[in-house]
Length: 95
Image 1: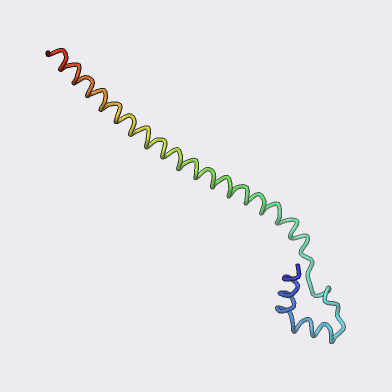
Image 2: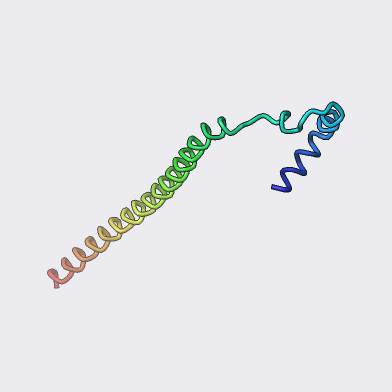
């Protein structure tokens, strides 16, 4: 809060000096943004939720791709094992 006040004073030095000279309250110089904030805040919260959901969805897709890759490798290895087993069975039959 104090940092914001200092920042405001630094950014509005001339306006504040003029307001003091003219006798205008600095409060009148600051627009009330509470209405805009109340309208925007729920939208920001909704977007934050959507971003988190998209991030989780992307992570799930990445995990699913890795699972698919491992399943394909497993299928390939299973076929190789099956082929080698058939080869061994044929060798045993030919003995």
